[in-house]
Image 1 (cartoon, rainbow over the protein chains, first blue to last red):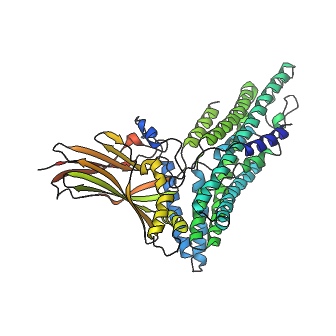
Image 2 (spheres, each protein chain N blue to C red):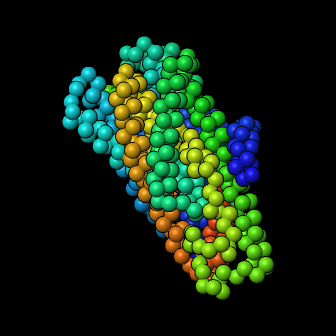
Image 3 (cartoon, chains in turn cyan, red):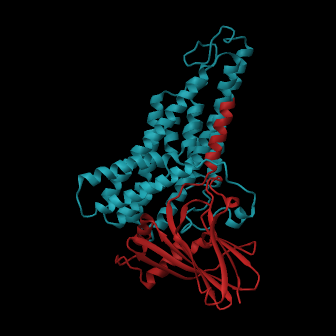
Length: 321
Length: 197
């Protein structure tokens, strides 16, 4: 039943009206909020904010410029050393780039807090998302270049816009399905307790594979849900897009594709580590026994599903790049 | 439960951060005095190589790494004028009042080495008076799509001495305008000027 609901929602979400704007300031039309509105709030901010993200962002910028240098060096020259540097920097760039906001980390995090999964699922999700994120960029850039006569930058903006909206609606759909399912599970659980099945009194906890006293709807993790989460990564990686455009401009697209393959590997590593850490966190939460463990278990699952839903709504309303 | 709250806060705050930069600009601003008027600001923006080449891929149609007039017009129409929605990343404060930069003039694009350079003028036409007057000009993109750094030097003033204008020039941080979740504190050019004679 749940799988059927998920399929219907998925189809509905992909067909949903798509409406928001571009975010590239050079080509993308007006931003959602004009700058003067943002500036009118004159409250002092800053100070105390961590500069770690900023340092990451700047490191990323330097890595990107380094890659540009190596790609340019490979234009007309064959050097195994430069190739090695380029691919190495690509992997590093993928790791750093993925640590910065975006790349569906919120979805991954909330998904693995909501659903039960093994670390292996985390690795599959990380690699799946990383690969898809970069592959989308390749398809869009190469597709725009070969099929479309108008400005390639404009074509890419256009394609990104629809894909991001579709992905955002998919996340809304998944968040809704998980939320409804987890709330239903909570009620089923309560009903089971009311019927006198008190496994807590028997000292049983909420770990997977416990006795049948506690209904385990979440144990039947839909086979559709993990691929759907990976599918939500169907947004083109902006970092890979610029690298591909750059290599296209030099007429050495194959170098660009090799570079973004390295980037996707680095990205997969970061996403997998994050996913596995989340899964282990969830397992640690499930270790808690007694009523508090119960409360924590349901709270985390429902809360994480709600976060995913809210994140999807936020993306629909104001899609990031 | 507390861990859940932390997780929720973390994810929400992360998702509210704008995307990280994809374009880098080295910015230099020239301030021109003309007679007894503060006439104009001229921005020179040198882009990073990746963005430069992606623009050239589209608009350097004859692939000669030079921008001819027809190409310049295309770049202006398709990869510059949209910045009007962003006030051309220019945060201008005249005498304590924020002023929206809605019109710019004399857009030019050229290639220096492998990098694209945009130049454009913001007309001011302000009378220079005997008392100190102040303007602040900052260049930053609050959406952080673009990271703007000031070139070295980031600002130059022309025509002040000839016009008998005394100036006081500084590049200062403005914490009140911190962006990207308050992490990045932009710097702005602060210029005080008055008629010296």
